[in-house]
Each structure stands twice: as C-alpha cells, then as structure tokens.
Length: 266
Image 1: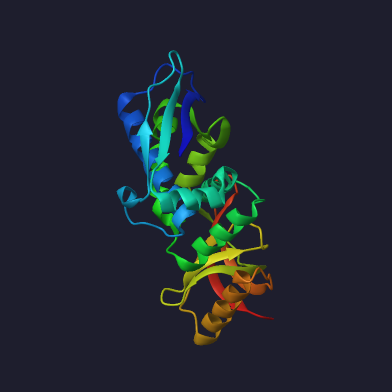
Image 2 (image 1 turned 30 degrees about the vertical axis):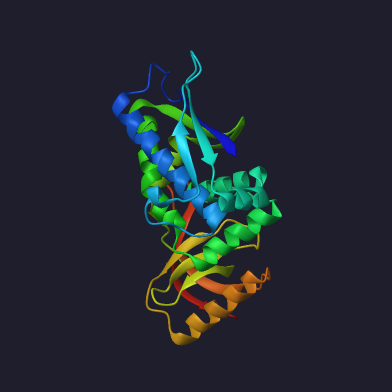
C-alpha cells in the first residue's frame, strides 16, 4: 500500500532562486519528522518520542520530475496491521488528522468533518503526551527556507495541499504576546495531566484545542472538576466550565495557549 506526499518550495516574500542546501536539508529532515510523528499518531493512536520509532510504514524520497520544484515523498506500508489501520481510517481520514494537528500547531482554523478522524484526534488528546509540543521544534526547522530565504513551502497529500508554511506561520511559531488582562471564558477539557496541572481546552466539541499551564497550583477540587469534564468530552458531551485565563497570542493576535488562573462549574 502506498501514498504520495509532496513538499513544494516556491517564492514567498522573495523570488525563488534555488533552495539553499543547508536550509533545505534541515527543512526536509524536519518535514520527515513531522510526517513520521503525525502519521504514526494517526494510525496507532500514540505519540512516539523519536521519529525513527514509527512502525509499520516508511517514507522514501523519490526522484523529482524534471524542472519541478516539488520533492516527492513516497509512503510505503507493508505491515499487515498498519495496512488494516490505514484502510479503516482511510486516506481522507488520514489527511484530516494530519491537517488538523498541523493547523492547530500553527493557529490555523480547520474543522474536522471525518467521523473516524474526530475519534482519533480525541483519543490522542486524552491519552497521550502533547503531540503539539513534540512538533514545535520540527516545525521551526521546517520553516528555515521561509525565515532565511523568504520562500514558502507547501506540504500536500497527492494533489491536495495539507498546509503552507509561510511568513505568517513562522510569525506564529516565533512570537508570543501575553495579554495584559485576564478573561472569563467557557471551555471544556480535552486533555488533562493531574500531576502537572497542564492540558488542553476547547471552546466547542469540534474546535481546535489550545494548551494551558496553571498560573498557580490547582487545588483538588479543580483537578477533580477537570478530570470529570474530560470524561464528558470523551463521550462527545460538551458541558463547559468557567475558566479565568490570560491569553498568550502570536504577534498578529492568533491564540497560542492559555495561562489558567482558575476554573469552576459556576
């Protein structure tokens, strides 16, 4: 079983005049890591520590078409269990999971429509360490041709674009602006680690999640409240809690994460 990914480097703020070998090599290595981590998570429902630990499939760089700026990346799936998992999720489901994860990491809106993709994303957020944190450094490396050469890079599955890396997504990754005032918002809990007090919050059952860290240690009542709410989200129930937060945004105002000051069911 095979799938074809493509990465195309093109003009952005500057005209395309070749891809610098150093920046391009780091970018391609990072994109390989991003694909290995997201595909493995999509199929196996777990977040691996190192990209080479991905099991059941491999990614191979293929010869470019003559005159093309695209690098073809072939995904070969030979393990029978992984073939079955991919067939169950489907190509469209895999596309949706990858796009949702990367869009969430870069602050871009994307609503999941595929039912199986929704279940896979929900399971990842509830049961595993934060995939977004694992991907952040790789995404910064993938942006090196954008940062140093003024280019854009578009990752596609077949002919369908998944995500474009550009000045806007680079800005989101590199900058943080802490809002001066707290806000009261209605949220549900899609991931929660009672030991660290960290997790992810959603504003709607189908909305992208955003990470949070507590400003002060959470008390046992707040921890219990959030754990109970997480269980409701797992059952596809959205019953919001009232949270007091400070928003941490990119420089262009897109939400990156929350600083949590308190949460209640009032």
